[in-house]
Image (tube, rainbow, N blue to C red; front, side, top):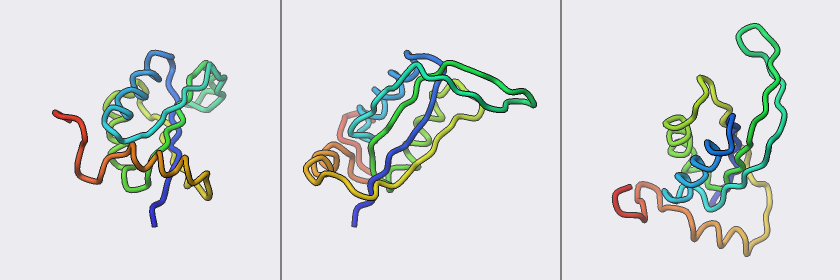
Length: 115
C-alpha cells in the first residue's frame, strides 16, 4: 500500500516559500505545494517569545520520499531549526491520489535530467 503524506514547513518570506515549492515539484518530490500566508506564528526561540510573519508550505507527497524532501528543504531553508512535519493522509479522493502518484518520482529515480 502507498502511504501519502502532507509535509508542512514555514519560512520568513514569500520568495523562500516559492523557491521551496518550485524545487520540490521540479524534483518530483511533491506533486503539489500550496503556499499560505502571510500567517502569524508565536513561538519560543532562544529563551524569548517571538512573533513572526511567515508563509506556510503544504507539500503533497509519499512517505517513501520524506527523507529526500527533508534534505531538499534543509538545503535551502533560511532557518537554523526549520519546522518540517509530516502527517499521514488517512483518506483522499481517489482521482486526486492517482494524479498525485503520477506526478511523484519513483524512489531512487528522478524524471528530470540532471537532478
